[in-house]
Image (cartoon, rainbow, N blue to C red; front, side, top):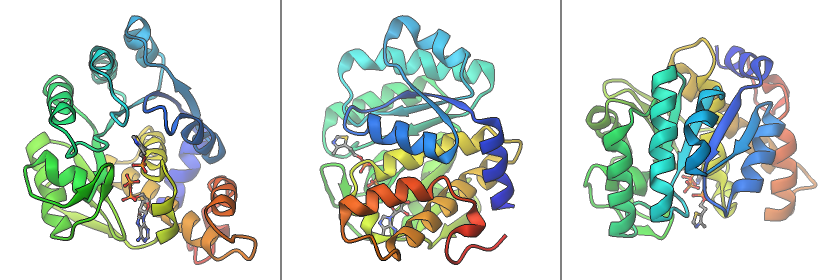
Length: 258
Ligand SMILES: Nc1ncnc2c1ncn2[C@@H]1O[C@H](COP(=O)(O)OP(=O)(O)O)[C@@H](O)[C@H]1O
Ligand SMILES: Cc1ncsc1CCOP(=O)(O)O
């Protein structure tokens, strides 16, 4: 099932409208291209609605959000909801400041996200569960399954909570992915790029939970495969080889099974 979703996403080569942060724009565009999607980065309010309406999916990521970015994010999200295409919201660093918390509150009040994706600290802060964070990083420990369930229930969405174990929940059921690599936590934008690939997979004909799970599992498999390569000596070589691996057939990634 997971491989089918990856193949279908690649066949479709979905256009994903990104309203994302400036740290990860280039990495995300290259990562999505390698995976088999088509990225467009566009943040102007003047084109938000039109851009979303010609796209197959929208990703809203608040990593370097400015107050003036909020209307474009809301307009793109609303246009996506109207067209019936997936919208993924990534509340990067939401627990760090009250400005971010207020920005995400405004966005989530206006749009219905298909998926909310974030690390444990980000998702915990969305539902007022105390969790230790350091800027955009999650440093705490606790019950990730409870947080994912609560986010899904409170925002009537699918929660994708990332970390050593990724948790996907529709508010009732919980699915876990343990494939991955700790090296991803040293790559800035690893979570943000995953959001882009999740959005691409949500454009397939499969259910949102299955599609989100397929994206997360594939990403983890690609990271595990990359970590094991002889030529990978550290973060720099990991990034290059990981971008390559994102284009591979799921079965060609070590440990991969159809
Ligand atoms: N310790 C780890 N072991 C394996 N995979 C990890 C680990 N930490 C993070 N990942 C993976 O890295 C990706 C990004 O997750 P995370 O680091 O939680 O996001 P963010 O970059 O948003 O903080 C996910 O695919 C997750 O599974
Ligand atoms: C470092 C940083 N600062 C603002 S956004 C950003 C990138 C965060 O990316 P990720 O959470 O995917 O590592």
